[in-house]
Image 1 (spheres, rainbow, N blue to C red):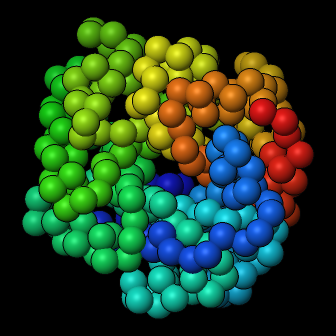
Image 2 (image 1 turned 135 degrees about the horizontal axis):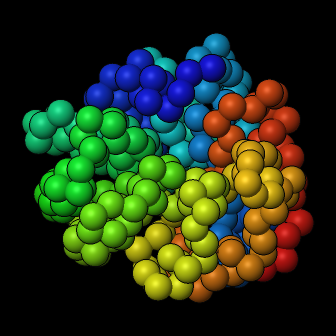
Length: 284
C-alpha cells in the first residue's frame, strides 16, 4: 500500500471528498450522538484499496457495519453529484474531506467551490511535504498560510482544518512545531483534526492538548497504539489508549466528529468492523 503522501499525490491536488447528506438511521451511534456522544465515523483512507475497485459497494459495506459518517480522501473518479447520491442512498454523511495543500489560491478556490457544492463542512489538509517544513521559519509561514486559507474558506461558508502526524511534535528552536501552529493560527479561521495515534506515537499526551486548547479540535482520528517504545498502530481497542476518558474529554472540549482510521490494515473491512464494535460498546 502507498503512504498517505503518495496517495494524495495520485489523487491530484484538486481531489476532494464527498457530501454531507443523507438521513441518519434510527438507533446506532447517531442517536447516542444526539444524547451527547460523539458520532463515530470512518476515514475512508482505511478502505482505499476497496474504494478504488468498488466505490458503491464499499460505502454500502461501511454503512452496514453501523457507521453513519465518513471522511473522504478522494472519490476515485466520481463526480460530486455521483458521490452525493451514493452517500444519500446509503444513509451516510461526510462532514470532512482530506486534500493535499493547494498550490495556490486559485486552486483552493476551486476546491472550496466544489466542497461547498457537495455539502462539506470542513476541507482538511492531510499532509505537509518535508521541504515545506524544514525550519522554524517554515512553520511560521505555514501558520500564516493556514490563516489565509482559513479566511478564504470562511468566505465560502466552510471551515479549514489541518490533520497532524507525529512530525509536528518534534522540537525546534521556537518550541514544538505543533505549538507554533496552534499559537500562530486564528481559532476563528483554523481548526485542527487531532490524530490521536500520531500524537501518542510522538510520546505526547493527546489529552493535554485537548485540555489546554479547548475548541481547537472539532474532529479526531481514532486509531490505537501498542505500549511504548514501539507504539505500533492497531485497531481501536487493541492498544493502550484510554478511549473512554479521551472521548469524554474531547466531547466536553468541543469535539463533534471522530473518524476511525488504520493506515495499513491487513484486512480493511475487518479492521473497520473491529474498531466500530469496540467503540459502539464503549461508555463515555
